[in-house]
Each structure stands twice: as C-alpha cells, then as structure tokens.
Image 1 (cartoon, rainbow, N blue to C red):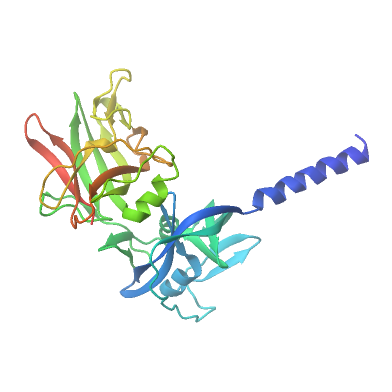
Image 2: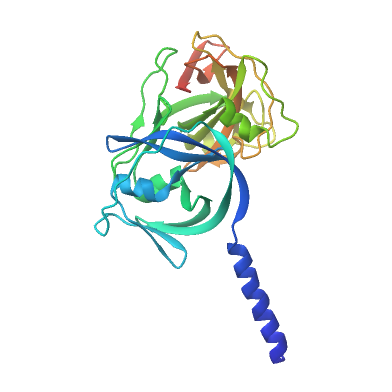
Length: 331
C-alpha cells in the first residue's frame, strides 16, 4: 500500500476519533433540588434530560468527601478526599426551566467500577447520571419529599418485604419483594421506584414527541422510573414487560409472563382510581423480556390531578379474587 494511502487512512481514523469525542448540543431542564448526603442537606443545581437526573459531580464529591479527577479524559472517582479540602456550597433557589447544554460521552472509573456514559456539561460543570454516581461510590440513592437522599458511602440498599396498604405504600427509593400470579404463571420480583417527575418536568420530556398533547386543565403528567429485578419465574420462564396493556400470560412465548407499566394502576390520595391514558415516551418504557436474575430499568407515564399530594400505584392486585397487590408511593 502506498504511503499516501496509509496516511489518508490514518488521518480519517484520527478525524473519526476526534469527532466521536465532540459534545453535542442538547436542551435540558435545570432546577435546584435539595440533596442530602450523610445527614447534610444542601440545595444544588440538578439537570433532567429524557427522564434521567444528572447531578454536579464535583459538588457531590465534596459533600461525600470523595475525590474527583480526570486522567486522559476519564473521570476518576476516589474513595477519599485526602488531596483536597474544597467545601461544598449551596446555590440560590431556581425554578425548573429549559437551557442549552452539551452532552459528552465519557469514561469513568472508581470503586472497582468502570464504564462509559453520556455526561451533561453546563457552564463548565460536569453532571453525571445520579444512579451512576451512586454505583461508583457504592451508596444508596432514594427520594423523600422531593429531595434526593444519598446514603453513607459503602451502604447498600436494604430490601423491604412487608405488607402494604393504601395508607402505607412502599416509599420512593425503597425496594420491595413482590410475588404475582399472572395468567397461569407465578413470579417474584424486586421492584423499586427510583424517581418521579411531575408537571413541567414531565412535560418537558413528553413534548419532544409532537403527537403528545399538554395535559388537560387541572391535570398533569407524571413520569415514573422503575427498577425491576426478576427473582424467580415458575417453570424457568421469563417475564415479558410491555407486551400488553392489561397483563396476563403471553400466548406466543412459552414460559413467559407478560406485564407492562399499565399494570401499575394509579390512584389518588383519596384512593380513587385514575383513568388510563395513552401517551408516547421518547425513551425506554417498561418493556422487554427478563429472566430470573436479570433486571430492567425503565419508565411509565400516567395522568393525575395537579393538586394530588399523595398519588400512588397498585401493582399485582387480583381483581377477580380481590386479593394481593402492593402499593407504591409516588410522593
């Protein structure tokens, strides 16, 4: 091969690498939100994009006393902050609004965890997906009264397995073990609601699809992020999420139990059931085939009253026998 041709190929490869690292412009929702780390609560700027919450990486590192550095464009999150004593500070209250930011695909490592994911860059600050940050520093992430709760470093989620009812639903960010009979099959799964977006935050995501319309007067959209891990399935089958609106056993996949986010039925604070409405989502809905040991991180969308202070979801209830069911809080 001629030297000129080789040089051209190398040049094109280098250009591809450069272009791959170039950040892209994105519209995001930014607002202040209270973040609590190890008992310390501060207001921070957080970003919402396509249903994912992004948090200021270095600020959270300061709050948790873990170091954040860069090496060859890789984010390194350490286990202690011996090298710096930067103090974390609060920011002024800021209502949710849309701004232009940059999205950049970056590698990260820390706590024996390595990966690569899209980060958001805004005003020179790197924002990392909240759950990715929790994974790197090995700590639980939960929500309480709209606040983000980040637990003690090294402390993992505890599973909750207790009876629930309409007045005592499973709290946000709490894992619950449920057993459900779907059609002729039975399965058990760990379910946790990680995040809830309401009102303007939810609409800023849904309006990306032109066919979606604003909620009717007095109503608002609510987007719910589910983390579902299938523990066991009868006859070594799989659970198929999102294949129907009403649930029931799949007729075209042997050993498959079928549910979707529509099987999480919304109720208001007065225990009245909300009507189901069809809305398209611009990112992953609760769907996919999951076998025992696998998990699914996905979303559902509902329409509720604007003034509803304690909406909730009912999952796994058998309306024929009036038995079973687990309640999950959305507030």
